[in-house]
Length: 421
Image (tube, rainbow, N blue to C red; front, side, top):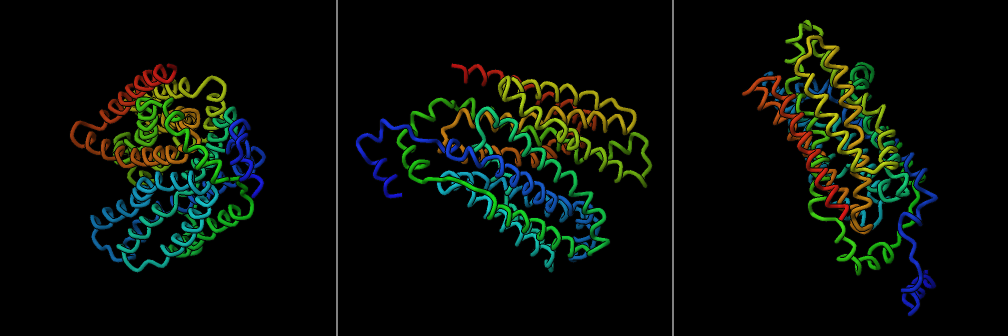
């Protein structure tokens, strides 16, 4: 370590090539990707598996009236994503300063503890606070994007981030299915302990398997001198467009969530089958995304991230329109699956472009902002869908969302031209 420091401080140090963070971690990125995919899957399974029984747990904790149960269920579910949106840039900045692995360990251990504590909540208020803390201290998937996005070779970054998206999507898909049968075996409170145990496995893998070569001098101090010049290549238009697009990923998917059960009911589905059918239709988009995320990420490696983003936004906007004219629930499920397939190319391509556009010492912070933008879409989407559905009509939700996606494609076309200069 002493010899390395003295070499860097010698008069000839400037003439010597300094290995980048990605170059020094070239032998580790595949094993780290495996752990990140597994950890993202387990944490998102644990976070989403409470969906089927959340109203029952809220009722168990003291909410008595139907309106109170619905209200507190919504607040408890959204609290985690709100917390993640707030702290993702902070953790990203700390990842740039202290390394990516410590952020992964922090997220996994924090989530394992908080998930178990949720199973011991005594009131609805405690449930909401613990769900909020889970978002504030957790964010394993966000930390994984920072690690994989900065360690994977540039020519493989799109594929690697696509694989990571597949793990996260699979977790969101499997979680509600697990939550549907696990409480009958171990009880509602026991389900949270199972979730905590799953995340503990991910934490142990992170501690003992993940490897990282992080040098504070090389990765922070040495590069801080070049900060002004290296960030000059990423214009505010480029970064702004990527942030807006990250928000649109979940906005497009979530805008129909508040009205989907009502909409399916209008298609003639019996009331007794309504919840099950709505769950199947909602899962269709996640399943579609799982099929294409890695492939579209690899396509971004070959033809460029901007082209994939623009094509996916236009294709998703087009697929939104016929959803307003379906006459059977299965038609809606197929179209939602197609929409998931086209949406899946956005996040890997966005993260890849950040890798190319932002200086290495700022990549974690910027990827953190992208995570905040993405979770903001999870909040804004249902708000827009609910308001439009209530005041204009259910069909208008699809038209407005499709229009926003196409406008976002135009914005990205403009940003692509700016990035070329």
